[in-house]
Length: 284
Image (cartoon, rainbow, N blue to C red):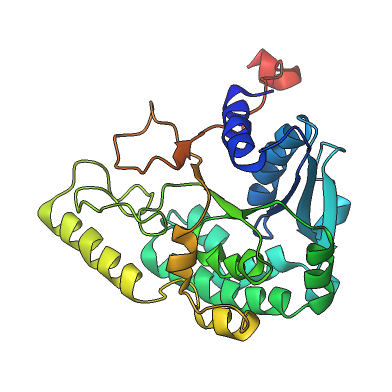
């Protein structure tokens, strides 16, 4: 088992294990292949410790056999939603932009993805059958992807009074309520680094101000719509209440950044053991 996954397991174990009993943990990745693969890797690591681990998959993904660890159980949803991955890529053109040499994580591209995911989240959260199945699992910990356009789904554990952790492909200073320095990039990307010009720092600062005051990538009205029985909180406020933040970055390979104690870096959980080259690849 990959050492970085073991680190994540140790962190989550601190959150979930107060006795020797196994706990029920539910993962909810965005409905795209890359997120499902690394969520299922982490889920498998938790299952190896004896926990009852589930992962939510849309109906169209179940036949693809993306969850290799058979000890991880699949909670299916969204049969009526069709191929969400094709829908997302078709609407946002994010893959086409990548192959055209454009940066797919520019602000405008992320905003376009956010608009699409607001609609998807509304459909999922409106599925009372799926919500009831999550409730009946009696989940001890909910693990959500923290990429901003997925944060509408934090309403689900909040409405069901389930503790939650956030795992993401970059360290989000807004969601984790880090005392912010304009010298630190607010998003991952090739445009910014730890050595920015004044105007790049200004752009980071303005984006930070916008994100802490407005729902740039998500819709906090979901709280009052789907959890009217709960006190209203913005999605930013709910994110700050996460038990732990897990970031898929490497503290050695990446540059220094400000983090709070409940943030752990576990870059490389998607990695696997190398396989020997064969055929033409080996010959080359």
